Image 1 (tube, rainbow, N blue to C red):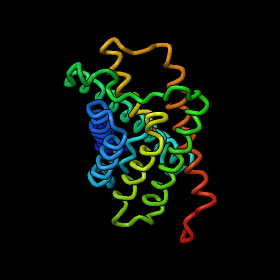
Image 2 (image 1 turned 180 degrees about the vertical axis):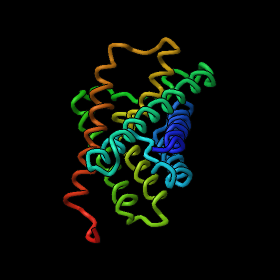
Image 3 (image 1 turned 90 degrees about the vertical axis):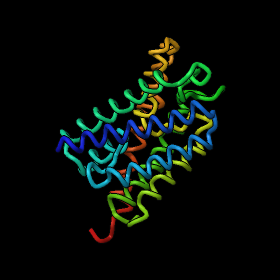
Image 4 (image 1 turned 180 degrees about the horizontal axis):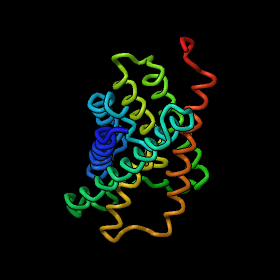
Length: 224
């Protein structure tokens, strides 16, 4: 595990959360946020894909660890730096956003009436679709030169589908950033943290692991 790969994961995750959650906070639009996250991820994959793999998401890293595509030590380092990058983005959002845009800092929340178990299932399914796309495009190399566009497009579509329901996280580091912002602003609802852990932590990680196992066993590259 090289230090530049850890730095790439930190910078990549920071960029993703800053621009994605920042757009969500400023515009309040699911469409704008989906496009911001998608285009940001495209750029990140181009910049850091050959350095660290541009995981920028604990669900991707943990999924690849479950499929033994990455060493445990490297996976732990990646996840720690991803979370640090997301948290740092939250700090920056708290510092730069004026009060008129800082009510939620682009936080991912369940829409009114949606139960925690429903949020868990939604985040798991959306993350499954995203990580499955990443696995085929990048790991099985079926995406070719279009890999960044395919991966970014998959994230955009997933957020468009789930944004109004759960906020469309698919990435615990993305959820962590605005949580840090809210904590610093004194607006964090402590009682919601268990729900956050279930929906955006367990839900996304389960989706990532399930995706890599399904795609590696059932949709295995025939050339391997």
